[in-house]
Image 1 (spheres, rainbow, N blue to C red):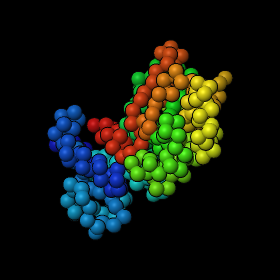
Image 2 (spheres, rainbow, N blue to C red; image 1 turned 90 degrees about the horizontal axis):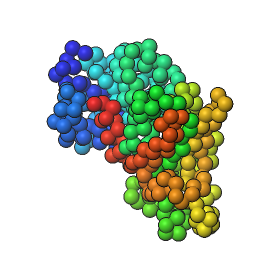
Image 3 (tube, rainbow, N blue to C red; image 1 turned 135 degrees about the vertical axis):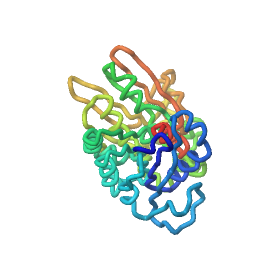
Image 4 (cartoon, one colour; image 1 turned 30 degrees about the vertical axis):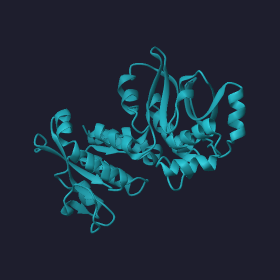
Length: 319
């Protein structure tokens, strides 16, 4: 990386909502980011499906290519940012970058929740970082605290609200008496829910995030299929009202705990006492409540759903 002191050259894989926002934010906040990083960070190559299509991003047209491996193999790229999503071709691209000694920043929770062991081994073998703060918890810095700040303690359990879409829906059902359908439509209108929200409503998204967090927290390989999963499709307004009369709030929780050398990881709707800190986490916000053997309970809280929080986490990893 001979030119690292001049500028860090980023190869961007994907230029959808998140990728385009990364490029825009690197351009708009270039001065601040350079001061924090000690070096300018520039998007130098971008891989997209159709390189001829015009895009409203502050990147020259000749930077685009429809061959993502061309970006990964470019000797001038110092770091690769993967925001394509899915497992293929993302896994092959990340593994190739790591084998070439290039650090990778990714927001790909699906890939990390299914093939994290292979990716971590490749990063170690290549002697480079694989950073993925944007994959879990939106704008909450949770990966780095688990990997570094709390590394000196033994984590006994964590439980958290890790899906902003379902939390928004449950909040509207709780506070306004909306049906799940009405609340979902409102979430989609405000950009807190995808057009196809199945992965959120059925708990797949939360299970993937729970697997990633459990892998770090307990230093054991946990994949999404290991996680017991139940979504919110069976939760009714009557269930929520009944829980409220008993002094509880209904939330979709990701829960993991160490039990006699084993680890239990599950995702399901749960009744939380109204006085518990997680009960007051509303709308699209996320929060993760961690209990360490010595440090005791800690909670991290922040924005979950939407592109901006994830983009900020990607930039944090780049810096």
